[in-house]
Length: 221
Image 1 (tube, one colour):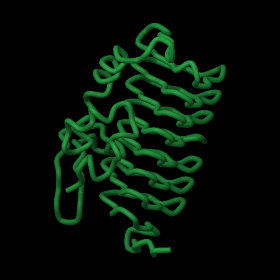
Image 2 (cartoon, helix red, strand yellow):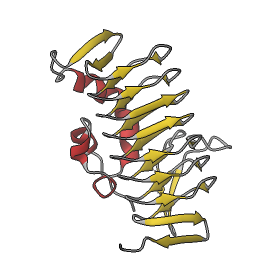
Image 3 (cartoon, helix red, strand yellow):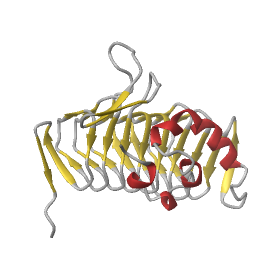
Image 4 (cartoon, one colour):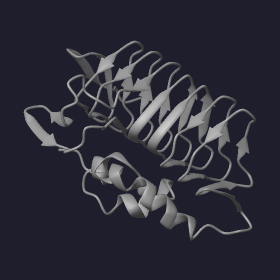
């Protein structure tokens, strides 16, 4: 099964210490809001502004007009939140991350340098360092029958106990334009997903996902 320290370099997020408490990353989803409020107590006043209502924004971050930010939320140093973004609460945006125009986030940790830059929906998910979602790619976080999400890794099943569970993207995962990551999808480190794919289950690290029946290992350069 997939483990938190296999997907992420935990030094690449202010929330790394919190995530390290959980063997599986999806177990942290119910704690994101609590972690943000705890982490906010450690933020240096010379670097962050307390905007009230449990929203803290780094002074070096660029937040454009016409954005909506609902707490708890931390926007870390050097991040960019573009016009029309909707941050619905329980969201941590990492250092130098990009949240694009018309992108919606809810109950999410974005590690440092993550890019969700164009018309993305990311809910109940964790995106590792440097992960990128192409234009229009989304995480689907609720099954059609509303039953609890199960993580499928080959023949092995892991019950999350959660009705809402989106995607876990390992460090430097690359998701093509227009992809749908179905509830409980896990994408390994350095893995690439072709555009317009509908993905479910666990895709191993350092692979290329072309179709469900065509997943190939990346060649060494």
